[in-house]
Image (cartoon, rainbow, N blue to C red):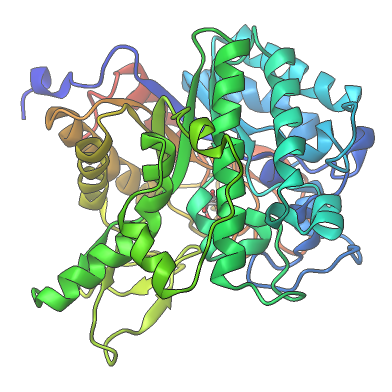
Length: 470
Ligand code: BG6
C-alpha cells in the first residue's frame, strides 16, 4: 500500500488514551470522597461485594493517579496524545449522591486536572458514570431501580457541566450502558446478592438510565453550546457459529440485546423489536409523562469499547458460553485468544464501525480498545511489549479500512494508556498501558512509571497521523 493511501486519518482525529477514575485515582476516601460501588469489590466484578470494605483493596490506591496526575499527563503529552478519556468519580462530587450541595474539594480536583490537560492541548473526553455510583444510593435507594436516582444524576450532571463548561467539550453519559444486563451491581447499583434481579427490575432500571442520559444530553447542550455528548456501548459483534439460518437469527437476536441501548440513545425511542421481548417476558416499563419526549434528546455521537467478537448458535449442545470481558459468548474456532481468553479479532472492529455507521449515520468514537497482558520488566529494566504493538497496529489498520469504507470516526482512545486495576478481575497484573506502573496484586510496589516499548510506537503513530500503521 502506498504512503499516500495511508494518509487517511482525518487531521482532526482525536488520537488518545482512556482511563476511568475508579481504576487509576486511588485516594478512595480523600478530600471528602464517598465510597462507590468500585470500592467494595476486592476481587473485581466476579468476586463478592464486601461492604463496608474490610482491609485494603487494590482500587483503594489504584495507581495513585490522584496524586501523580501531573507526572502522568506530562508523559501522555510526551507521547503526543490529543485526547484523554477519563471519568469524574460521582462520589467525589456528591459523596452520598443525594446531597443538595456538591463537595468543593472534589470539584477543585477535576478543575486542576483539566487545567493540566489544557497546558498540553490535550482534549478531555469525560464519562459521567463509569461504574462509580455512590454506594449510599445503592444501599438506600436500590440504585437505578429507583426513579429518584434520575434527579440525583441530573444534579450531578448539571453541577459538572456548569463548573467545567469552559474546559470540557466532549462528554459520555454511561460507560458500557449495556453491561447492566450482565453486571447489574457495577453498572446499575443493583445488588444481586440481596435481591432477585428479574428482567422486569433490570429493564425498568435501564429505562431510568435512558431518561437520565437523555436529560444529561439536553442539559449539556443548554449549558455548553457546541458541546458533544455521546453514548457508550460495549461493542461485541456476534457472528453466527454456522451458516444455519437458526444460528443467523440467534446472532441477530443476541446482537439486538446490545444494539437496543444504542438504538434508544441514538434514535430517541424504543425500537419495535423490543416489544415482542417485553411481551414474552412479562416486562412492562413504567413511563412517566414527558419520558418519551425527553428521550428525543439523542446523542451527538456513538462511542463504544471494542476488545473482541463472539459467536452465537441456536444449537443447545454447542452453546457453551466462555466468559470474555463482562459478557460471555460462544467461542469462535477461527480466532486466537489473549492470555485472559479474550478472542482477538481486528477485522471485527471494521465490521462494528461499519455496522454502527450503517445503522445510525452518526459519528463514531472508539473509546476503548487494547490488550490486557502480563508485562514483564526484563533485566535491563525494559518492557518489550511487541505483542501489544502488534495488537494495536492490527486494530488501527482496520479503523483505517473503515474510514476508507466511508465511516466517520472521530477518534480512538486506547484503553488503560497507563497501567490500571482491571475491572473484571480486580488485578493489576493485567496491564494495558504504554506506561508501566510498578504496582502489584499483593499491594506492593513503588508506583514508579516506566515507558514501555509501545510508548515510542504510539508516539510515532500519532506524530505520523497514523501513516505508520499497517
Ligand atoms: C471495559 C470497561 O469493560 O473493559 C473498563 O469499561 C475495563 O472499565 C475494560 O477496564 C477492560 O476490562 P478489564 O476487565 O480487563 O479491566
